[in-house]
Length: 151
Image 1 (spheres, rainbow, N blue to C red):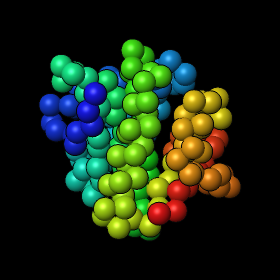
Image 2: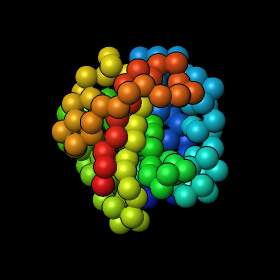
Image 3: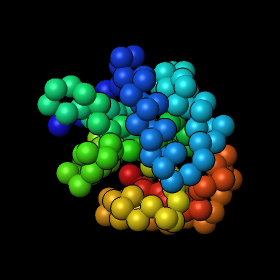
Image 4: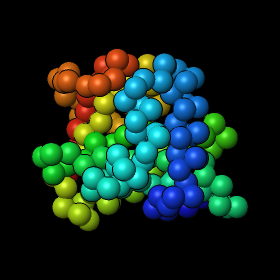
């Protein structure tokens, strides 16, 4: 497994990987469709970053985005690991890539929104040092947990 920066060839995998996990647990919302349909325009062109995880053959098996925020931080968005790669530590590798990149570019913090039913994701975020925040404004009906990691 390796973590690479997003390239245009990853666009369909970005969408497919995320639609799979979101659709399994929740409804795909309009805000999802915007980001999944245009990762370059919605994340990369606005100062963000996307990481793709690939298996030994180069097939995409996971992803995560860092969406630039007005306060100089990044929102961790659309993090997922494909079913076959779960339990391998890939989620931790993706989170490490996010933290490392954010520190490299001088971001003050990472922020994320998630759902309280996603136990493994919450455990990963807390193990990385994220702390709970009070609820905030969000375009996602499913978001009921808000977290940040000061850098």
